[in-house]
Image 1 (cartoon, rainbow, N blue to C red):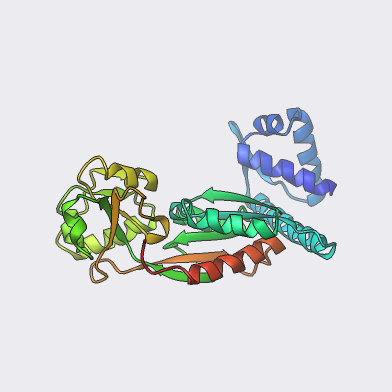
Image 2: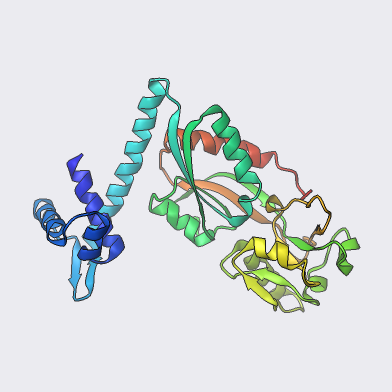
Length: 302
């Protein structure tokens, strides 16, 4: 495994952009780290970095090698889990990149239920926008991605996909709260709060606004879905989210109403992995559980 440690040093240098900073991160002297990488480059037959006045940057050979290293780590983790499975141990680690809407209710419930049967499995849950989640899969930084309206779907194997309409979120005493379904124009005629442009909900709203007669002009634009839910209680504003991240509070202060599909068609919540990647045992089993749970979701927020 010694060569894997050297590749770990290469990754540290690439991440830090500096041999000195990477050496500090890895508790080495800069000269020791540089010598080790230089020896590896000599054995490998190619330099891995562009040496710049202000630091280092991976060259094309280095990027190829780092991709191989990350794939090797992923395969090694999978084999370790399979060996543990043979020995009757239920261990492993699941790394998941997801949209914010999955955090309040869906993922905590699914992780807790999975760990009830597999208490040795640990999780890393990373909140990412739709482009970042796909990048996590491509770099092997995450095993799975669960994201609303992904952008590219390049090198992305879809495990499960469900439709999620866009809902309006408002205080219970908002004038629009009495209607069972809302037109987008009515929401945009008053103060509204919207997610930032990089999120799937905003993407669908922008598309719909371009087709209609009203302009999307949020009084608050935010990367936090939690802020949206709380802010509408302070001003007669309308926010926007998808139902998987919504539940009516016990005090009845918030209500959720679907936007008319003729104005804003439903988007897709997609669970996926890197194309042609064999997942570690724990991640593969958790993905199966998520796929079943997604298909069983109610169609509306309650």
